Image (cartoon, rainbow, N blue to C red; front, side, top):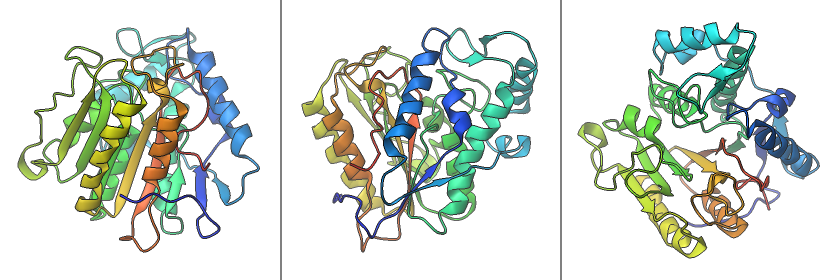
Length: 307
């Protein structure tokens, strides 16, 4: 896949609400770090040329029921009414008073990006990419799965969807829901057979309509830029698949300075990833949605921001 920088012929839409600066579903010990990172992101990009900010709409319960069980959504609703902080899972994904509105805002940001794709080829969702939640379970800082909602909605519209997920952790929720569906899923992540979430076996290649479309590119723990550059060669499968929509999930938790360190990547890897995500003029009508996955990230630089 060719790479290109944003030029005067490109306009980047950023889905943004100031409420994003106060949202984090991470463990209480690290929530302030992730909130500070997204606040700094806004300061870094607010005066950039060729960038427009798009206010998201809220999703509804009915939207989330496309990819989640009612039991999970009622659990989040109940937790949202409690006056204290707690966990939606065994100790990672926090709930707090009013979390339901934030969940609906995050999910609505994804749906807003789909709606705006009629006008913009490239959009970035700085608070998105919650790829661990399954149909029935919150996990890994992900109360719901906005990635699955995007994929489901695009498939319903007859689109050809590819997902490139680069993160310290495997996108178990996406693989689980679309393992047998005609969605290209390319995951690049840290793996040793048991590292959270415990999924990502490279031998799992899909089944049914999804056979041959599941690629788990497992990097050794603490792998660095050289290994990552080799892994990016797998982006050729995206070009061969010729999607009409590409969802790029970029988690900064693989950065060498991240508090949950499991890879040893520098900003060079994220810059290369961002450039690789950028569709080229004269391509095949690709619509691109980079989404940043939740992490503890000490380096607030967006891996998919224009540079």
